[in-house]
Image (cartoon, rainbow, N blue to C red; front, side, top):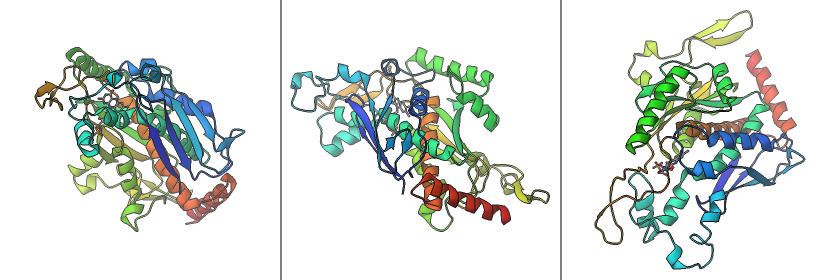
Length: 388
Ligand SMILES: Cc1cc2nc3c(=O)[nH]c(=O)nc-3n(C[C@H](O)[C@H](O)[C@H](O)COP(=O)(O)O)c2cc1C
């Protein structure tokens, strides 16, 4: 079983992650991990924190001579901001006067529920862990999963299809996503320049008015074979597992597999993907891909398409109503340097989560302690599919 864990706080020394279960022999490039980390930091609408950080992964175990060795992989991403917090958040003791309490919980954050649950007088320790800074190492782990999937011709990319109420309004091809992923400057992660300008105008408006804005990102996995996941039990259904992975992301409040919400408003004849057969190359093909590559909880060989619906960022420069935890009097919510819009970055995190879930499903189906063994099992299965 492929499994990962993360640790670390927003303003602590570093973020840490471990990944257990990758077979030995997978070529690993640290540059590729760092490139994914760079992509997570991009996008118009990010706050000052992203100017402080230049995220870099340090792999400290499980990879030797640029290949996995089958043992747990551990990696670290250091927080450059830590140097500004060493006295405020020391591991031991420290001067109580230097603490930075968050006593006016921010609506839409873990602040109040977390302070009550863990019985803290203020929300500092809660926001430190609830922060999406944690997703830095999810992206690093996702980059490892991507390098594994690459060995089987599977790619995972994303794009932004809505910001606020503005929408892209058309489908994007895989080639367009590949081109988008090669850009060295990221505005709002949209394949269409005209739509991207409309997205930018919405973010501009949020900046001007001290507000924030959300949106929708779409993650596409290309090249997956049919038969990953299974219809046989609730927790083997890959659509459910992808949904959990996406909604586990900070600020993601909804998920769509394929064209779910459009489909719910249409008739069946307009939604299901018709089945056809090519007698020349003996293969099945579909009239469309509205199911997002998943039927009965299994991949069907088409692109896997999953969308994440991101709420607007909870911390507003124009703070919302809250209550002071000390005085219990009405008070404006705390403000701490914050992003205004993060939809392209969320897309990159979504890619990582999808890559991890697909890598898990691949290893469940094909197993193997070495890449060679996994590949042999995979190739055998492809032969079975071809001869079906
Ligand atoms: C990439 C990314 C960056 C984020 N940056 C911020 C931020 O700067 N300020 C903020 O208030 N929330 C930010 N969020 C959202 C919060 O982390 C999230 O809303 C909060 O932890 C509460 O969790 P929930 O919205 O899932 O309930 C960000 C989310 C993502 C995905």
